Image (cartoon, rainbow, N blue to C red):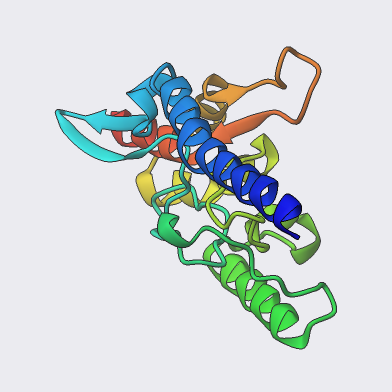
Length: 187
């Protein structure tokens, strides 16, 4: 038994140092090379931080593009999904309530036209992006509230649409915070 105990303790200590000290230091060092130095990429307007580029935020006013719903109420400290399946009655009620709210705030939009991402929360609960289609379906509401031409809002969406990674991987996306900041800057 003594022959097995000593190597087991040494291996445990070595793995503890590797996974609790060395690995986190390496990851933190790599993060320092990222935009924002690992502290997050802030979005600043007129010298004031208005949010983070990679964390979804709540926009519910009719004058703004709505974000994707969040299962954690946009709390970055508790990033998570709801873990409710598509047949869960509570989940279905929440989705139906989001659909009903969307239709009330976007008259003329049919239930079948609403992109799923506008009524279902993402896995992290903090998705900062929408598809261009999810942004476009909100244009009539925003144009009416702000007194802007729909063509100008469509152009704004096009200007803020990022294509797939390397032109091959993933969907095109629109960052909701960047889009709303640009919307506020329109005259």
